[in-house]
Length: 279
Image (cartoon, rainbow, N blue to C red; front, side, top):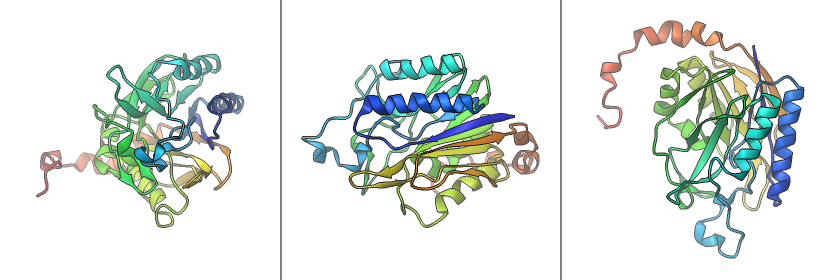
């Protein structure tokens, strides 16, 4: 049995204080018996994509960091100290100067198992992400960790069933979703139904960790949740407050799930070759 923790947090103006609070959430998760902790999208930053890049003139420029780097190293050190698998999310810059919305995955010994970068980059009111992020240059990955096989779908990527299916085909037992979801962004219950469907169709656990609280143009909803491989809600955090959500996951249920026991054996992948091309 795997106990996971979702650190439903807000982000203030003081980035160092935000980091201290994230490290404290890791301690609390460890004390509660968690083996895995997940953080929301851009865990240490005010949500800068709520402004178009040209509107950000005169504001403090968001600081993108390499991975490994100063922030990632502090998270890794705490993961090692607590023996806590940690899925973080931050604004990354690579050696070519490209910037990404990225989730580093740290194993329980603090080692960096890999980095998932957001693949699908949107631009609409309050989410002007194309001005800040390059799209990922690799497809969805599943990471072997000390607590099981973990996949990551960062926020907008969850809307793409091809992406979610690949995580299943590559053996994910748990798919975590670092999110920045606004209050009233989608019709009531739709984003939850979407991920419950992905869990049911792919036979894995899904754990969505959302930001929370009011910012300049957006109020983030919270309401983080976990659903099981049959698409049923297993745990839910309240809305509009910071919260450490705990849930116990039996990853052996993945192989016994309806999807993997029944649906998958009747798949016809030879008919799906042209998914990238409209009929």
